[in-house]
Image 1 (tube, rainbow, N blue to C red):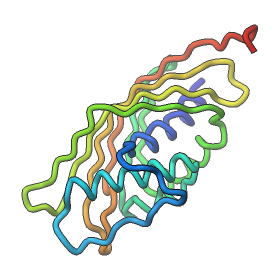
Image 2 (cartoon, one colour):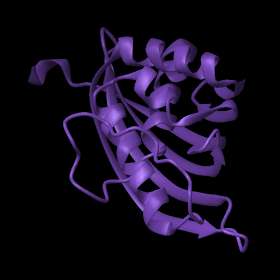
Image 3 (spheres, rainbow, N blue to C red):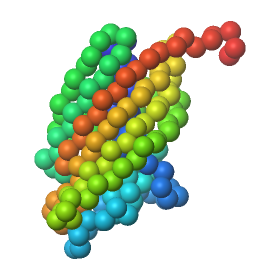
Length: 181
């Protein structure tokens, strides 16, 4: 189960980066360039773009929204205990690839979204709660995760990028009724 929890954790955090605020484009847009103070609208659009990349199961596109020095911390609580991961951008991208490889069905709901712009308007914090339900290939359970996430955005190399992600997920599993299939 730890391997499945680990893989689902990748999907938890990748989708927890996003919120359905605007219609999803066919291709995720590149991170916006930074020439003016950060705004709530910019951060929400970044979250929408990240969701588009997640829905396409594209770890490379998701990574374009992370600063080269981004720090990602995932805390995942499941039936086997707590798993704590500290990843850099490259490790996170690999982690996402592993997660996408095993995910079969996936749904999510985001709530309690809050964007706070720093007084100097040079950084922003987005927080939210994400509820996810998924099935994993060849695994007879449905997994539900409740995730609380905090993402810091800052201008980096003339683009607005996520520089820090902190996420705490609690997962539960329920056996899939094999007779109904």
